Amino acid sequence: MSYADKVFVENIKDILENGYSDEELNVRPKWEDGTPAHTIKKFCMVNRYDLSKEFPIITVRKTFFKSCIKELLWIWQKKSNKISELDSHIWDSWADENGTIGKAYGYQLGVKHKYPEGEFDQVDRVLYDLKHNPASRRIMTNLYNHHDLNEMGLAPCAYGLILNVTGDKLNAILNQRSQDMLTANNWNVCQYAVLVHMFAQVSGLKVGEFVHVVADAHIYDRHIPQVKKLIENEQFEAPVFKIDTSIKNFYDFTVDSFSLENYKANDFNEKIEVAI
Image 1 (cartoon, helix red, strand yellow):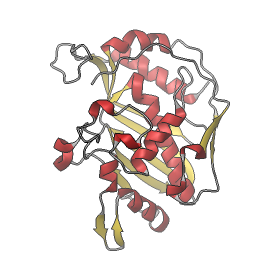
Image 2: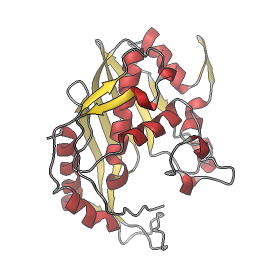
Image 3: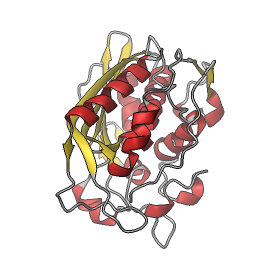
Image 4: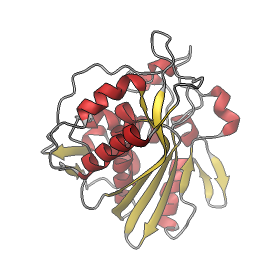
């Protein structure tokens, strides 16, 4: 079975069996009908994936791999906040009258700052340091800037990435303040696993560990029956991840630069209601 399945199922069971319910609290998220969207949660869930062994995608439910990558490139390559530049409607609920999500995600990555070596935005600074300062303990990005929060459509959930080179391997820690386990958990894991592969390849490194830290890992009340059913699905072997090894420039990757061989997964045809 996929290692990601093992991790996902254990996480879900832990939350259901040992989690804290916020049903007595006044919560911000709402369902489409206006009902408060309560959760059961665990604090600080930490998962480790060795990317050199297998790609961390679940099979108990199909993860839409290409769609994950499209959003990843929209944020990290285009550094965009315009929903018209994303081939998806997942951000429509958080867009403003100008069709942007404000100063969130891609916008933050694209802001340039002056350094002794020149002017860089956050992504280009990472690329520079991986090539010129691989021993640095300061190779990181941060999207959660307090002075811009009031101009963001949604405060970033996956907000901080730390990259660390050990020998010839690139390791990463993704810090996430909040995660809807049913709709977004493996989506984010796959995205940042791909991102580590991208950074490693253009920096002449191999992939190492990817560590995912979630401060508030939760299951929404209306999702509980669905996740209970989901974790009982058959599990399959992890697919083989393929990347176009001819690409040496981070900005040359496209959605077609990546593929999965023999990805077998369960279809999940139930409608998933999204809390906003």
